[in-house]
Length: 492
Ligand code: GLN
Image (cartoon, rainbow, N blue to C red; front, side, top):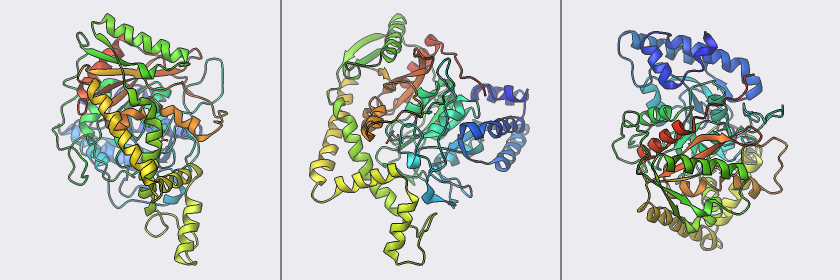
């Protein structure tokens, strides 16, 4: 019975809790046992909060018994270790935050606890959410539960929310929180055969979430079904006076409004996402998605997003620029690690930052300070800001004609740890399909849509108009039904 409990979706768990088939305490225990059994292999969790989980689950059981259960009462949740959780170690997967226990709770996690969620622990990620493979964490690599057919080699889960994606795909939690700056929810969801949605910039509060690039960072759920993402989004989103970029808009009940009705919808297919040499499996899965939508009565419209080719370069100026500013606060004085406390202040800063940050984070800080420096600001940063505007304009114009845009999520399936890019830009190419949406601040979801020739999952991305998460979810819900993706990774 107990591992069976881990196979249910959020919606099924919610129903089972209501009909008293099982208790929140049983759910929490089943998941914690499974996490502890497998964490040496997957390394998905940096911190497992067993005592806290069991306490929260007991409170949920009490509320359920009194008929006071909230939206996700008693549901286990894994939290990307980028969200500050009061009194619980919060690391951003960086050495520099060693021992950091926040005095406050992020708005997103608080919203989830207020809705009855039960915290299982803190999930591994790329250091400060910078990466596409979860190989830059101070706490070690995360392993994808999927393997190529006939092979025993471990694969990366994608990044930066690699721990979140692995945990959901391996049934260690029904839902996990991720953040997406340039693709970090959608790309790992695609690599792990599950669902991940990045809402519109401003939908989710950024307060108490460790900042990477503030004009891009958005929280979102990683789940096994579109319905579960809809449930989670309603819980997570909402105006927050503590975040000046938080949108003051009503949050729909996304689940209640979920409709698989694609008939008559206009689906844009951007030609720029179909470059020469595109991976044959990625193309096949994409074409299959287009075919299914067409058969269901959607209108397929060829579109052009002409500035797409500049998106990656733009992102890798804007994101490092913002990160160099955001990460200036880690100086050995206020948070976490301090090295050379007996030395001069400048030496202490230097020693702490040299020891505390990994190579990728240092690279981004250096790029960021370079593009913001007096002599280069106009040539790089200002130009990137202008192109960012043009990219957003491309989308705005296209959305006068279409309801959603369908693209692949990633240019390839998950790769192995033996993959050694010849330069950092090669790794950055993982984000080529996800970054334009991030720059434009639009909502986008990835759903599992097929397998490549090696039996690995590939995702399709649906992009919507600003604050039209409902349409994105509805189209994804329709496509999810039509595709009927049921393959699961091997159990360990
Ligand atoms: N892979 C991208 C990067 O390395 C995106 C990361 C993210 O979305 N947090 O910046």
